[in-house]
Length: 112
Length: 112
Image (cartoon, rainbow over all chains, first blue to last red; front, side, top):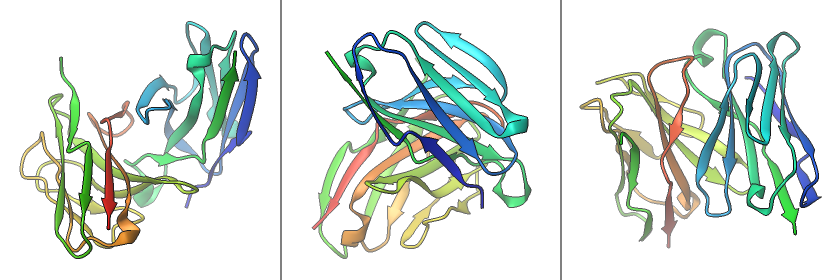
């Protein structure tokens, strides 16, 4: 089945720093989402981004589906950005379609 | 506001008991999913449904069952709870394939 790998696995930032998180996937996909899991465990939708670039405040994301990767940019990080960031993809083949497969996650800690 | 809710939020049960976790969404979404989240494994798909009377097994379905008698609900049943099923369970829904998925708050289940 499809492999979804995220890097880096862990990241520590000082408040105000910028960062780039990466999601690589091993096969073609129809759909890609980025989520933030906050320290209380809640999964928050960040971006629905099968292709192209989107921005929402200090966060932006780019998906290059043909090269099988997506990037999440966090600028001017704040302590509230801490948590785990997941990408999830919907494979574009056979019986694997119509379900979201999650990546391994990036654990981000933003220090004041 | 339309939403997706899980209940209970926390549950402790004994080994061998039958347990049902509820998931209810008010968006009229066709697709619904159950995931479990464990340290070191990320989110793994248990069961999913494309619509009423449709259910499908995910990658970790052993010991779990679901039923879809209406659009709004997808209850997850552990037939005979085992300690290995101690986990955090998330329910999700979306309109159809290739659309954005939304997650409930999660249910923390402990089997003792």
